[in-house]
Image 1 (cartoon, helix red, strand yellow):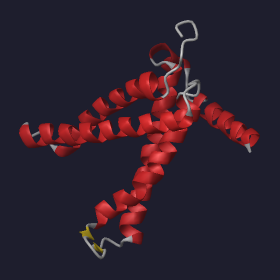
Image 2 (cartoon, helix red, strand yellow):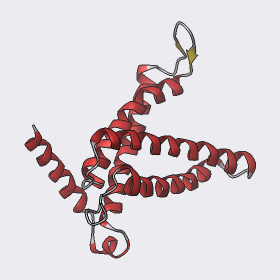
Image 3 (cartoon, one colour):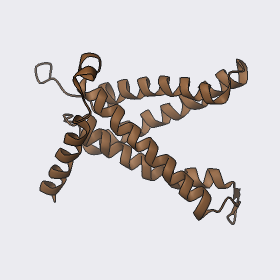
Length: 169
């Protein structure tokens, strides 16, 4: 199984790197390019899953549980989040930041904390831009996404999937 996983990983990296043209090499480090590419693919995957759950699984109807009623968009989010959390972690671990020597469970826990930080930045950023500064929601979301992407990349690179320098340990 490990050999097949390695083959799949190499094929994904080759595919992503086929878009890493000389123009991008001048401005964007390889790990950042892979992170942006695979992260963008994961976001699109999330949007598609969300639309499928919202429109077809929950059919835009309230979800009545024994103890609470959930709106269909929150139910769709709750169903898609674990899936895209997992795919995002695997893409980061094996494609974007594959040189970390940290144990997988440590990486997963750290990844969870970074994602929680991104959710908090999104929430607070939208509250600030839209709620306080009256910026339109779509451009506000775009600005907040820039902040969360920079935060996430920096934290994933330097915390979640940190490389140990053997000379300093």
